[in-house]
Image 1 (spheres, rainbow over the protein chains, first blue to last red):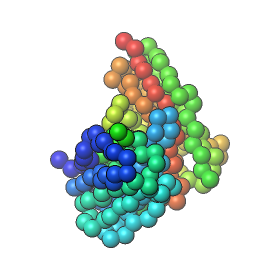
Image 2 (image 1 turned 90 degrees about the horizontal axis):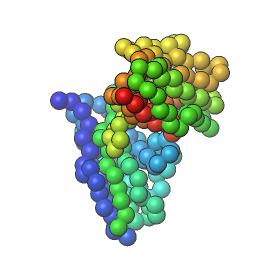
Image 3 (image 1 turned 90 degrees about the vertical axis):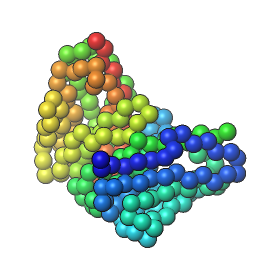
Image 4 (image 1 turned 45 degrees about the horizontal axis):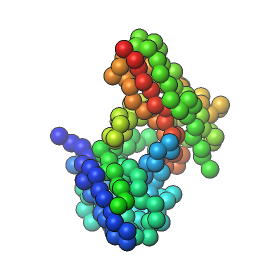
Length: 114
Length: 110
């Protein structure tokens, strides 16, 4: 089955700790994205990558970091600099980043602060 | 800056009634508009994508219209079913970047 997987489903972070959220796709898509969703708000773009070894900041990149070493994988690290990390994190991919491209979403990871 | 608004934030209808969901956006320079469905605690599922040159798009019981000049899109769901209960989000593609509305939470009661 082709699709996007995210792990873990739930993640707990302690104060001062960095945590990494996993995102893997087997759709052979070039572009991948990370979004953050807070209650009552729309999704906000954190980072995106159009190709391996390249990524760009989105609207709310502060306190986050990413890597794109493989086409299939786009992990997101929530660093200790992110002061309000509690949210639902969604990973998405598309054939390429551009117009008229449908994005396909993973099931999400809920991050909670202890 | 593109802003996307969805009103109402929540909606409850009896089974069988038609659903009408609204989405408005401030900048008409868009490439496309997409409607997504999100079940509680889950990711998003794409329902319909309307290209900027189109006026509407249909899939089964779903029909979405787009009026770029007035900055509006409407999603119609005919003969609603309890399985249609979910949050529906619209997203506008401006220069390859999706801008999302906050969504409309729909409950269809049996």
